[in-house]
Image (cartoon, rainbow, N blue to C red; front, side, top):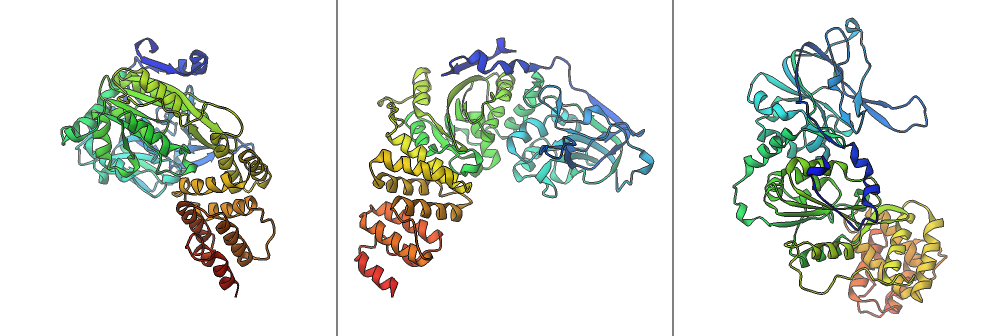
Length: 509
């Protein structure tokens, strides 16, 4: 299938070796089947250990479809990867001992519902290649097993809208949460499997969905889009320098989009209209299934995800789009987060005719020098320090702070970078915890190693910080850090313009 792909690797020393595992991908030549099962028995969705070994932490999804004689139907398992299954169940059951809680007359088995958007598009829709034949029938129930944390939560609102575009109303969808019998069950086989195969005709499903929303004021939609992860927190694989990368993409004429803030209909329209789509490997980029032919998808990858983005090769083949894979992601040693090397992205965009409109100088936010004292090294070490602190590993963050102070020639640079980090972490769910660690790092940088209690630390920090004559922005950041740590009185003293010593004396009274 690679002979038919318009595929380019960029900045890979040996792309053939790096992506050798992509040879497992294939296009199905056999058409998917619609299996009819009389008096089917469906076991409830649940989870189980993948190994009897108590040290084995991985779980598998349990639940499937049985014949009336009690045999597990292989087609009900969710295929994933090569010769692997994400779901299974006991191969045989004693039907006489099953306590059936529900009976359905006519049902269509759709496999496993996964609320994660990318997995929903690729896996939960994989049996709906025959949607037009089955929809709009008032007596038909569409049946899902639910995966993991979806239990009891129902369909995500975005997925309700996507299914409605396939003429499947929400009220006709049911989850198998107990033993259920179905008089007549229709079971479409999977048309595609994550990171393994797809069927060329499956493209019509995505085209049908995007076609339903086409023509709704498409003239106002951008031709070049960058999928930002800025609004996600650092525990969701958000690049640490996403804000800077957004600026780079704007310089090249891209419009920045935040899929999590968009209605799913607007997302589909935006991707269907775009001529060039760029983003870091993640859920938002799976909307590329709605792209038009001859669109150009630019995928940033690398560490900390060493595996190649296998299914994006299948999407490119399915949609007949051009795919460029950039090795532009740099890992952080002590955290799963990453930086995006803007130099690689900038050089690539300038090399592709019709993509870049930037006439400015080459983007060099990442310094070319690799001296240990450069700004990038200091920032990376600071991130290491804070997130090692969040993991309660002081043996990591204290030596890193020592290096940071030593390379910067004193604590001034460190004190300038801590507010920057606070700003970057502003959307994090663990803001209070982070602020406490930043207070600790600030105290350590200022040489405050001992204090009697919280009030004493408050007074010492405020005094030391005000002696530094911080900028208004840094003063505001440190005030917020202290406030989030519970130091209300001390935080109000920073950068107020009043006599610091007078305020400290007043607070001590």
